[in-house]
Image (cartoon, rainbow, N blue to C red):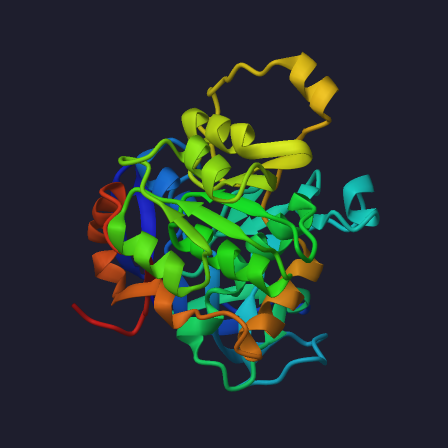
Length: 343
């Protein structure tokens, strides 16, 4: 099989490898589509260190090509999406259902305590407990189940309920999926602050009630003027300045959610008296759990998320480095790797 392996910082080689065989509790998935994620971007650039060689790619869907001896739930030719977070199911976090916080987790092509080869390849091995049936959902949409599950989990962490107001800072692929997830929960009104005009327009089309150009208006003041301080200020960029903006948008008794991935050494100042006096919770949200993945697949299968609007290009294995270059310049939205595609 062909696989795109990260062999060093900034270097990916498309290699010919032996097709893997599934273990007794695994399925082998012939990859139909795999999303390119900012986690992949950070691994490629060395800002997230990983052992090499390593096949990246953790947002994937495809067809079951083989099943292990102990697998009963799936058969060859079943169409599935992959949850890349493999928990130990023995630590305290796993026992309370927080499988994403597992102390000993394994990640298929993504971030984790242990990382194994992922889905920038023609085939990938996956524990049978980590795939969900997607029916006739196209793989190009089913591959978004993993990032959508992160949004479902993030929406849980935000505390947003029906009629709660929200301000989103950032409208990249994740921000736009989160926008739709929050609308499905009945959040209203929702304001979105975004630099890119095309992304602002898409945010409006996907249901944002207020869209703000931060180069023309101060986002915090704009939110105050348009809808008032909000029940949840959510940052989906990963920068200290925009986290502070989201926090300043949050009303007394509300929640500020850090969804974007900040630099590991980033620091920010916060007034502890304001946290005390205004009862504003500062929260994080990390990855997905098994429940949110199952719910994400359901949302996609039932057409509650406009996934097609988020995909800007489909590429082959050889084109991944060029896609990372475009991501560095915030060009386009979601990029999908189709392993069988040629340049």
